[in-house]
Length: 113
Image 1 (tube, one colour):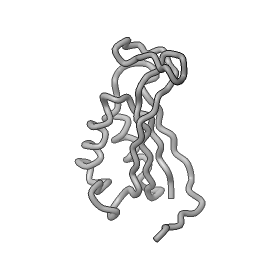
Image 2 (cartoon, rainbow, N blue to C red):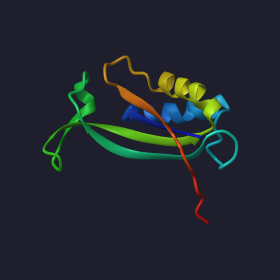
Image 3 (cartoon, one colour):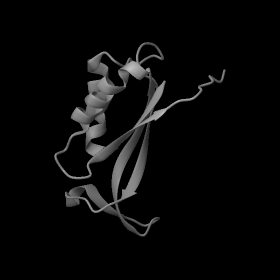
């Protein structure tokens, strides 16, 4: 099992989720086929953006930040390459440092009931 963690620009997250739905690799409406436990969280990353409209000043961090989403999901080992490809294509902005995708091994997963 693998965890895919992607940091995606705010204006691309809806396209990424739609692409995952349309790919048939993830059923976002259920815990069924494909990827599991998809979570999406809003985050801020200190970074000078190539597009000034994507950057704002954070009073909490006292510096310029870019608003992004962190998306995490768990999938079977044989789905990683296809899912990473779908995410990368849908999240593409053409700008440098437009996001990152990380893949990690899951040693053990225990469902809480």
